[in-house]
Length: 322
Image (cartoon, rainbow, N blue to C red):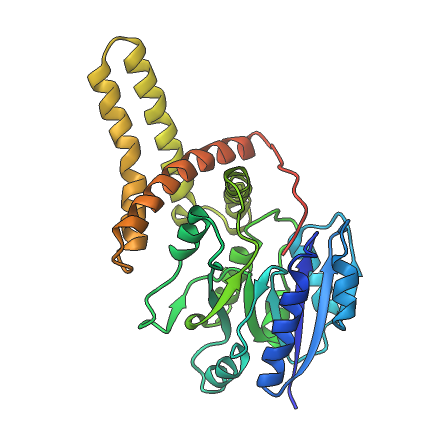
């Protein structure tokens, strides 16, 4: 019988960890594989570690480490020929594993990730932000350049081949890791007909903005580890351009040129509109387009601020968590 090691980084996820572990166990049972659960805790102050042990998980308590280091420490304990990384607030479907094992056996891909959706209780901005990554159900699978680490599945040999996650990245470690997998010959596949639920959605605007600010701080680190890349630079540069247009609009208004200011403001709205149309057109939902337009406008301003702060060596302190 095959064996899978499921590694879950965690920080103060008592609300979700029981659901996450139970769903993972059910998926392994449905696929008829032995399941090893490894929770790597970043120093939680809640009952998360105790709950994880009740579900039979091995729990490592390692405060102060970044997210890549947590995943790597979990992998050191892993004994399965298959290895999976899932976040502590993600509920995997019961039919998660078996079809992906079959796809790998057929040679269609080497590394897999399922699309995420939010529960019905999520506020509109969290639901819209998650929907932007979803594809129509007609596109059941899609080769990609990189995958997020909210859920990743691969044979252990691929993890060992690239040497695991970069332990120095505060965020963006999933993109850096899966880009290296691709560069080493792995075929990455995103799956849409089996969807995981993300229970750790942002419950208020402050949390959404804080997470985006934190995520956008990874661009400079990725450039340092992967070298110069227009692909990695394009969003930070676009966000800085929006900031420059804001400055020009304010200057024009102060100088008594309201028409020029209005033009600059209109130009700041265009990038968000293009991004929202690009991500929502597949859903054919004008409401989603408008929601994403506003969210992208905010995100572009946050990204510009985060990139400038990272150039100034500002380091947002945030516990590593799944």
